[in-house]
Image 1 (cartoon, one colour):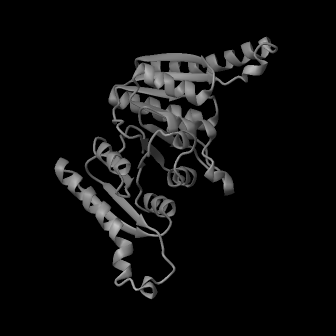
Image 2 (spheres, helix red, strand yellow):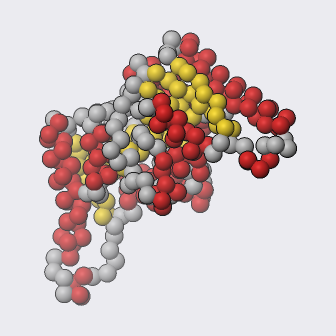
Image 3 (cartoon, helix red, strand yellow):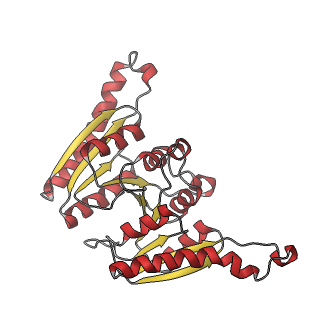
Length: 286
């Protein structure tokens, strides 16, 4: 997405599940054109015919075709123009490759829910897409709706966090959003009482991080409010989003190499697992 431009060229991953189709429905609130809808069926190296299964290719592709047929029905309902694609391969690899080849500026994925395991771990496809793509990713939880009225931006002062702040400020200006800026002091509870000076110094750092973004927002004449919180970072961010009825959480994710690509960052991953609203993961440069 270039400066002064809203997201318009979307790639949405679907697998026929309610979560993925809900994400697609919400994606149409962002754009109803230039939407590539992708379903991926994995490679099967065996031969089902040896097991007495006729027309094995059709059987393998059937879930893909079914998901895309449902996507087309949804698009027709809202007058959206989509490019459906049924792909073979590793789902995260095909989604990343197609987003790059098609110059898409946003990947939209569903989030499967809030049970105990999913609160701790984001689905492997979502995690790997976030790890490998250079595009921004919007993760939409079940029942959450896309909106721009109130954006919550979480900052930790890092380079990728500053890039997320750039995007949050840009979106807030384009959509006329209220911007909330939060920094969380995730200070180990066991040493708070014995390290008061360190705690105060870290709180000051958090204040400066928030003040930097607030100052930039005020210069753009945005409605903005800053928050300094203490506690477990992902819990504090998700709870603040709930309390303030935020429509969107914006967070950064830096580029990595090798196995580190699979780890988007513990805080970002767990915020996605707990968030009451969509989470926009802004990718930093490699």
